[in-house]
Length: 327
Ligand code: BT5
Image 1 (tube, rainbow, N blue to C red):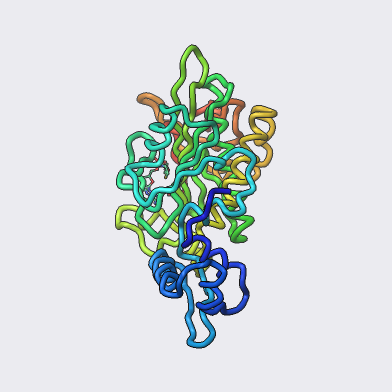
Image 2: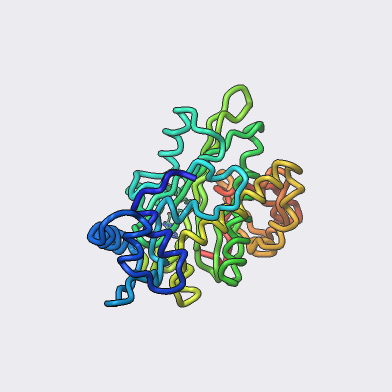
């Protein structure tokens, strides 16, 4: 564990106590003055910790749901490799970009960057990902897998499955996957994933997986209002983003490991069981032709197999398909 600053030590003492601790007790335990304690309490409050103070009783930590910082993100993280190096930033252009910058400086496999806010959050194909502060979990991680580039799509499917399972476990909501890697609740999007990679000689140099989850968003920008939702909207209450992040990272690591151990087969049965696209009518646009059919299964490279109305089956990629009934 990193050496804690005095402010973090005050926080740990508050966290370790079920009752009020007096300013005197804190100042004795820390070996600093009561006015220094008061300064740290004020600083912690400004970070979002709700700390009650009562004359003659002292201080008590009431709630830390709104807080996102490195300490909250790392404390109790149960992963093997993901997040062993974790960088938290108040704001950044895009966490994918930051991970790429760190990768260029030889950052290790499993490095994670989390941001409170992204100025230019990216979707796929140059689209925008809205990432305002105080609302979501916006993070990316670095992988240096021994894989050919054709296997990267499966990593993205595994990450989507991990997010979906974590949301189900943490909130009890009926989260599903819209192939290939949106997580949805009802017909609305709660999470998007962007994977980028660099490769050489048919080998992945590194892959960056970026995940955005709408957690405590109450209102969306007009252009996405009809197709986006958040966990707070769906559950009716605010969610502790740091705790949810740790659950997500644990599940994402688990399913990526499963995929890498048993390439496709490790995750496909579970993925298919949670994939809302399977069994739906889809429209496929390929070149100048448009076909309709039913999505029937996921292929070995993560493609979607569509049974067309003329009876033939085609394997399609995400750029070619729209699903009827989901945004
Ligand atoms: C995605 O793209 O869904 C991938 C999003 C990845 C975001 C993460 S956040 C951390 C990391 N850093 C980044 O810069 N990116 C990753 P796509 O399938 O192309 O969907 C983009 C579309 O989703 C947009 O065109 C909007 O219509 C919609 N959208 C934008 N922001 C949204 C939001 N917060 N919630 C739901 N939908 C949104």
